[in-house]
Length: 498
Ligand code: HEM
Image (tube, rainbow, N blue to C red; front, side):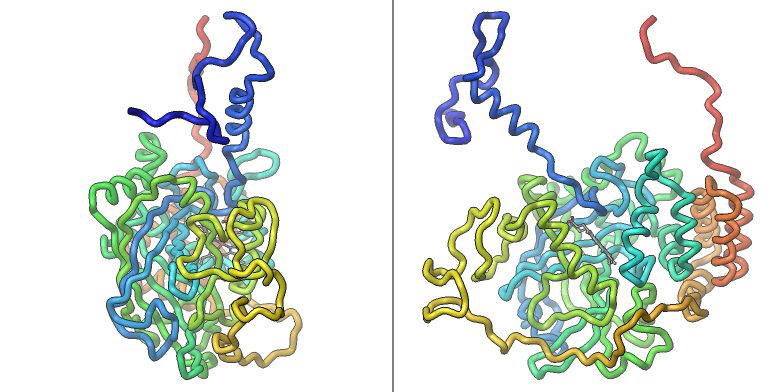
């Protein structure tokens, strides 16, 4: 026998398809409360989409430690080889809205929530090891250039390249974005990076600077602009389809986790700032150290509940993992939880995807959607300090070692110097081969084709500082392709019946 349909208050429902009317032709009665309830629920089915990274795909899975890194960190999730931790992943594009096509040229978000026994650790990274800007004051402006123009309501290549040309430190990341890696075929065929320098601290109170890498075991696969355009013409949801179907068919995607480690005292050694988010750490100086394996093996039963409600934040860290002086990182520690309170509500951490698997005892109190029980475990202990021996108390043994900062606080403007072009130059001239450079030139030309000549010239000047062949190659490709948006519409297509 099928289950009985009920109202949200649990009463049996006599009908779910016919409203209550005064006669067969209507009108409906105001007392048909379940009609009103149904319409009212529909009106509240959407929450604000994420201000960035709105389009996403996610899964549940497991992280398994394969190598011992306990000399670097006391984090419980790494405490022994073989240890398993449940993980919730979410991958995303940055600029597109929730309904945007998946196979667009953009940076991809790579978020992992590790449900460890000492709380949740969120690794909120990207599929690129670096970023466009290194000062958080520039982030909202940068994002504005990626979103829609206020008047045309269209994406604006003019704004993108105008901004990048004024921030030449962005050229490293723009090069990656315009390279083959700019359109992965789906999340399974791309790497993930923590991008920032974070820190680890061990049981002896020693601190290490660390970078996180998740390397795809499926191999890198990417679309060219032409392939992506054709694909988007037939499906806009290619990532969701690929990921969901792979997991549904038991073809579980995997990544190998590595770290790069720098002793705390070595931060002055590299000839670049190791906390600058526009720089990588050369693998020759800081080799990859293997840590474990990530396997995503379960599709959530309800996308909205698990992926739309997922609230990732760099502020979620566990004992043994800390921040670094990277100023972008400090801004992110504030920004994400603020976004979640707005998007999901005060008690977003209690929602299923965000609730830790470890015990939660805090003194935060009421507010909308306060649906969980008293967190202190003792109803009299609703303030602190208090007289109750069973009430939760803080434990200084979890305090991380002091972070040494030698500083006069003022606005340290970071000038763009030759150091900013060393790494993009090496990427352009030494890492990419001729064919990859050719595609880079043409991808960039396609992206900047619609820009005005002054903006193009300013961007060529930035490329020139990377490598003269880079500037010349992109200039030539722009000239060859012309203004890619200036394709005339030659015939009218009627859309109304005569
Ligand atoms: C100052 C710099 C940044 C600020 C202020 C910032 C802010 C934000 C905000 C407000 C969101 C939306 C959160 C939500 O509503 O759930 C977001 C999402 C995201 N950001 Fe950032 N962001 C910054 C830089 C970065 C960097 C450098 C990375 C990668 C290394 C990154 C990766 C992500 C990812 C992956 C998401 C989506 C998280 C998810 O899957 O739900 N962001 N960011």
